[in-house]
Image (cartoon, rainbow, N blue to C red; front, side, top):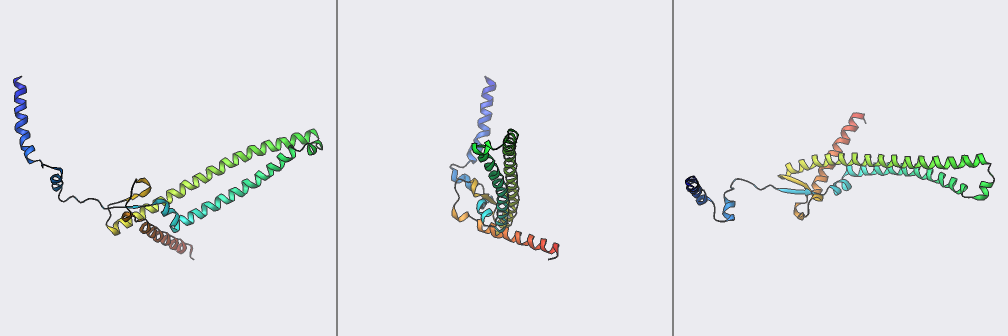
Length: 198
């Protein structure tokens, strides 16, 4: 019990000076953080950076071209299978075939369907991988451009607006980031052109 009293007395003696120095209200507490500057924040919309930048437009066009090529191949294969399916379901046509020819036609349809399914799966996987690669590459350029914009405009942080619940319009620096992306893109194209000797 004596130890407890000694502890309480010691606590009060040590704590009182600390309490006396503490500010009476939160506003006063803010004044003790003199010298700490609040970060300046901007934000950019990643989707707009992809859709409106030269790099994003080029990569999107390349992706669309790849998709069209794949669609043409799949469509051609699909038509061939539809023709086989129509023949198999046409009793008059099937009556003209021998048992071996009928079996061969049905086998051709089954294997063709399996091959088409496998081909579709491969194509969608290839498109998905191409899309991921494009997004990663554009993200790296957005990051580099955002870093330049931050330095040029004295910003501490640049956020992706798609990850925020609210962004005040005055903080939107998307157009500045896109302009910087276009500079990076033009510089890279010029360098590639010089290397090819064009």
